[in-house]
Image (cartoon, rainbow, N blue to C red; front, side):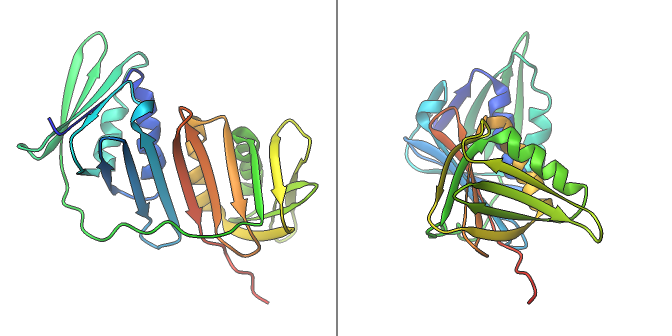
Length: 251
């Protein structure tokens, strides 16, 4: 068989699928003998997701050559919502039937067959950007800050100085500012080459932060009025990375 992979905890795969589906409905999973990855841009070209899953994070992994697995993420998501707490997951590519078999193994073994999609278009390149700010923090600190911001606005201002990171949002008369100071329990590492600030759409950020369930920490990188990069670790060596274009303030 050209591709087979297994997670002892099916919920790990569910979280990965969820992390991609917040931006796109369909995606190509590209696998080789060393890793599986997905890179896709949302329809409005405002945001991009980049998933890297090395073979070592799977409990079992085998792939012969290069394979491209085009999937409907809504279908995959529905299947994964049927996964039980103690279920194992096995993915097996059946090229002859042009399908991916999803085995959920618990008290019973259930096999779902998902038809492969022929998804055209070139894979988007990874942005090449030098950031002035890089901050590693507890995922929950950013989750809570964004929930606070949602009370007042549909966008959020992210800024950083050598003293810490600030998340702020304001409406017509009200607002909120969350400070995550250097040296606090929530801010694990901070590198600031130049104090920076930028504004981003909360609708995208709130969706992206749902991937926080895959990792206790997040690395946030940005510069003034430049794209934001959010990176989560998956089982140590795997990565979920998001890129989000800034919202430019009117003069």
